[in-house]
Length: 525
Image 1 (spheres, rainbow, N blue to C red):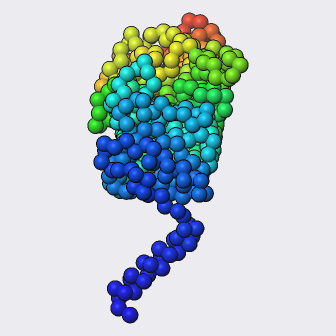
Image 2 (cartoon, one colour):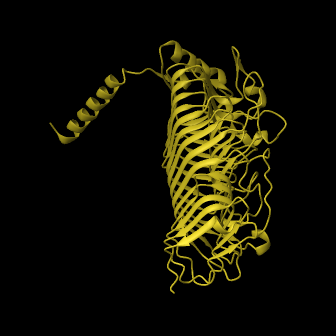
Image 3 (spheres, rainbow, N blue to C red):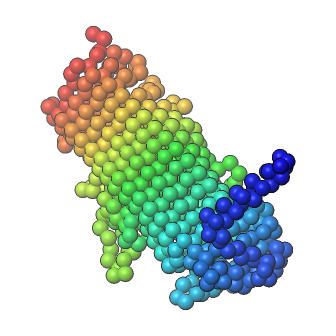
């Protein structure tokens, strides 16, 4: 047998094996139902007929060959896969009337929709282009790209997505959702989020590139059901607002969340509509409508060019989500681990971790963090009083320039910093780290720059049970620590190298003499 005939036979055998393994899945070519790939003919009815027949036959693949297929809202069916071949584009209609369609009691303003289904998929190497530039208004509904509600076993894989009228994707109350290897570019209208996971369970988001004007990869809880058991990994993310975010909607909260091995950068190919050109927060964790944020692990993140690399907020906007309309109480924010984060070229605003009086952000650990800020803060900035703003919309810029160029932390409990490096590329006269109403704070190996004439590197106000150890302030630092507040107590400095420090501590008049102790520190004397 010749080599060429052997190869042909081998390929045939492989294809047969694949077909047998897949149960010879039925293929429904949209052309067979009257659809035309000319970007002019509205193919909604033809494509929907293919989907409906596929579902009625027990499932299969609805196939889009190369070409441009114009459509309004399409409703998926059980065990139906939409497969867009390379060179194919599903175009959203530019006529809003083509999206005003119902199936039973389900009304979706989106190009692709599903509710109450199982085993649905959108796959391939083609493109979904909603043509959302036709819907640049704020006072009317604008079509999303994909809206999937109360479904299970969903796969979104390989496709490119562009230009929705609002959010590109919205998955609500779904189980076992996988989104992998997709590319999203959403920059043509208002509220152009990239990927929204809302009150879903058992979710995997991997290998995606998401570039959006509004928030990019977002976990939401627009109900009393939490987002839980979610993994976000190996993604490249850009946004003029928040790159990776939990919130703003947080009725049920966020639990068992892992975010790892992601790259975050400012948008490079678009101009801002919302937010800032360079973006707002790289990582934003927010609980403001009740709900519980618990067991969140973030690791191996690199960030370039955003305004604020890390933002955590427990607030009390108290939006109602339940059917009884009960106003929620303040939520719970606890058990967050952030490890191995490098950020450069970020603004001089500073990071913040803030709760509310009587409602602390609890048990947050930050380790192996290296942040480089623009700097430029003044001594006046260092003494700014920051309002509580309990009901305000949570945003990393909500407090303005913070008293600390690194981290400003208020109403916190069990906060830990280990091997954190904070630098400013321009002189900054603010504190590097400020903690107010803080209980059980551990600061190990804090490494900060110092500008001549700057405020104390570390400021503690009404702080209790604080230990500072293993730090080596740069030469000329004076003072290293500034303590305020009659509630300050049990503050310990030990095992630090203060040999280059001109003055270790400055103590406010209302701080008791026994509130702090320094021992086993090296002073060079």
